[in-house]
Image 1 (spheres, rainbow, N blue to C red):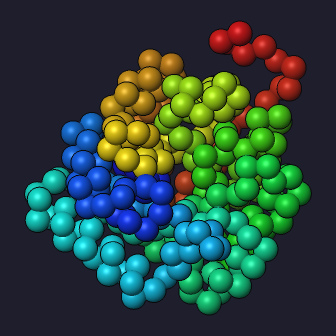
Image 2: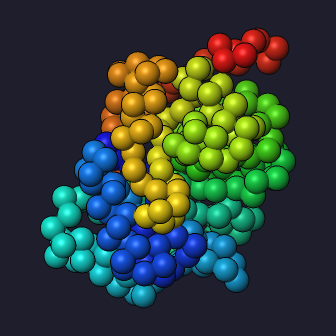
Amino acid sequence: MIDLHLHILPGVDDGARNMDDTLGMADLAARSGVTTLVATPHSNQMGRFENFCSPALTAAFDELENTIKKEKIPLTILRGMEIYASEDMDRKIRDGRLTGLNKSRYYLVEVPFGAPPAWIENRLQDMQAQGITPLIAHVERYYCVQDDPMLVFNWLYAGCRIQVNKGSFFGRFGSAAHRTARILMEHDLITCVASDAHRPDVRTPWMRDIRDYLTDHAGEHYAHTVLTRNPEKIINDQPVLLHGRPIARKKKHFWQ
């Protein structure tokens, strides 16, 4: 499996507090079946977690990679960031301060949870105007998507791709996120599922449970697609085939 979203870089955001946390997370990920992960520190959160591309951030990534190798944990570590959407984000991208996953066209972008759809769509279009494919982080947690999951279908068919957190399927982020994740799964509107892990003991990078869950509820092929095949295309900067079906807003779903 390939985990495209987790906060394993020590001491830079609200994820791993130190290298002990980092090593605990790496060990869990590897033992659960993850072979590759992308370290995605929060970035562009002004006054909190800015983490723009810089020599200091590069040095932190270097230390992470070297320590994982030294400890002989069987993981490939790639570089990325979780970019907090802002109205000046496109300028920062042009200036080289923000980057994609493994230097690909896919940029992991988080929007304010209460942002209205029109504002979100403007930010996505800002990115696409620069040849970027937005990978929308934990889309099931945004209030407008919980109110109207059909937004995700529209964003997919406008050229974006969709990431959902594994914890949402287990109720980690509340009933609305859980319900929305299930709807998106039922309609094949998820490009990839990731851990969004923060610690070795809370919101962990253990991925075997979500592989089993997705296999049980949607089939082995589906689990492989969202946990391995699509993430592999993303880190290799390859096109991810369009997927998904529209949602009938008044339809009763299989868990009701």
